[in-house]
Length: 491
Image 1 (cartoon, rainbow, N blue to C red):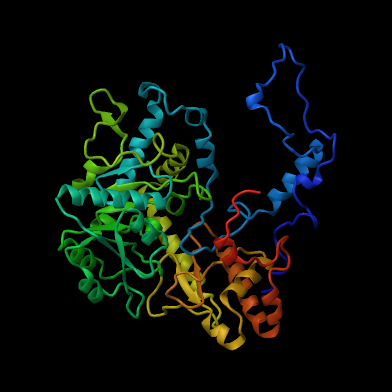
Image 2 (image 1 turned 90 degrees about the vertical axis):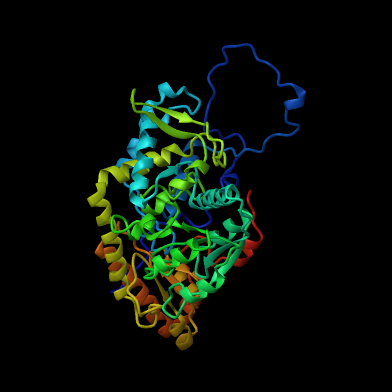
């Protein structure tokens, strides 16, 4: 199948910035007639020079930003096959509910008695998340999964200190998410890598050799970062528990097991949930997001405050701050409640049967897409069936044509698709990590696979085309390494 030209609309050549469209004297606004006496701005607060704001007409202003918005790629315009990131379509029913005045206009400093609806929603959501994960209590404060990781590690530290232990190390798989070792360091621990075996699973014998009385815990996700289910998970968690350690579940891949099994039943003590990956809330681009953290019974005293509590006699809800062993507050007020409203809608509109179907469809979609891979980009670990995501490798293609995973990714942009994650996890050469999620149709997966097959065919017939890609975007191939090392955070 020839997928043809890109499906995304592009702005006109040389769109430039709004400042470049500025012309002296043009206005896109007018102030009402002043009906109060003018007051001079105190000299200490007055600018010495004009602000240099752009001067444009209203139509130019609206058209410029509308064109820029049409150049964006988002979940409402296309498919994101990003492995590990789990970019789901966000249902509009949840967006509508989050905009209801009762949620959107509530103030975090209102008395509890005037915010009962919001507090009840948070109380019910916490219990639903605990049911899904097998935990006892949870905090909804963390604004993202990475903050959830830090929250869990601080709880881990507080627990060990309460037991009179001074642990120094946390174990993480060598294919773990990059935030895991970073969070371990922020939590004050040394990160120790656990190797994978030939099948891409945790090498249990190597794990046993690393477990000692210096180990505070293990961070792990199941299915793992390669999309493979850790078949010896009970042995893994038991090995850590035998030395008094805790086992932390990175919730990045919870989407694969919803309703099928629970981290708590596998032996995990702490769980974080990425709501955008599991319950289809907005990804956030760094925020606002949500990364709730659940814990087993013995860790509940250390959860952050405030906590939502219910008075069973009156049926009312309150924010409780009296918790002497708490690690404190991890976010302003009670987290990003607007995102949690969206998660609540996703959870309760699906119900238990619907959430189980989410997992089934996510795994089905991943396996179907994996079956459509060109022979030049096979699965990195073909011995086991993947769960909700998989890792392919472009190594055979590179050896045959010199075309790398990054070249394929750039060409897919020209063919109208967002590329997959590339070069992660680091343990796979020329990695291409793909996760279609449950929200994509069979036709979408077939279209993406056809585009990938076209790019692979072009690698042999027209390699220069892939080396030059993308050619249809306003900005050509970027120097991503330089961009990461030399950040420009303002214009």
